[in-house]
Length: 373
Image (cartoon, rainbow, N blue to C red; front, side, top):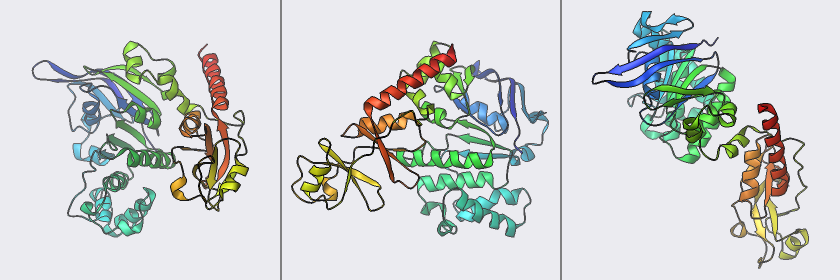
């Protein structure tokens, strides 16, 4: 059962009149992910590290399930809290499963059970058993971060702290790790505080987002939807960004209100005549034997049977049940202007024109305006 983390008027002052955190009061609810975000020097990492007393507060209280942390034994406190940092911080001389099992062993779990659980956690964070006996230097940055998350989970803590856990990997791997972590959090429901400097990451992952100002004061704490729709002041509005209206589409799911067209397709190897016969305009969608989209082909410039080198790969794919932002991106990026929607196995479901997406966006905007009224 997850617990609650409470900041009660917490401050951190350093010698020389430097204030890192100033009067911070907020709640990180049971089983939810709270993200701290803000400009450099706003005290987000300091606030995180005060939870497990890596940094001692100057005043105020932090409570775990109602119990002040300053009354707890530091070693026992830290064993109750999973901790994930940038670059994973794995022990270089231990294998992957030994790294994962290390926190459970510290909590008194017998070695056989700790290793057995470590093998199970390995797969839970998206790694196969082939990685079990590798060393950290044999892993990519993204793989190391997955191991770091598994290690934090090994002792089944009520609470987790995550300090920019995905910032040290490339954008593609980062998006994959974010998606994998969202899936994992839906399963485990831990009480998590996470620090990031990336507002898009905060809005994507957070159940609630705490925006901190320089000087360590809380500007606003709210759900991502509320933060985008009703920023508390000019600072929050500027920090969230000028494209917050577009970002809001990440929370507007498309459904039957967005009509999908039955898109004509051709397979690889199709002749120019077959492509032109299928074309409703210049561009024709190419699919594989399982009807998974491969790319678009230009029917006006095809000199022979369709080859992989003929494909335009600029269009993104919108998973069925995803958001209007995904569908709009698919429509904007496709050379045809038609966004491709795919099912759970990557198979073609249909396409949506940019005009249809804009109409659905207008519907989402009206719904948001009515909710705010």
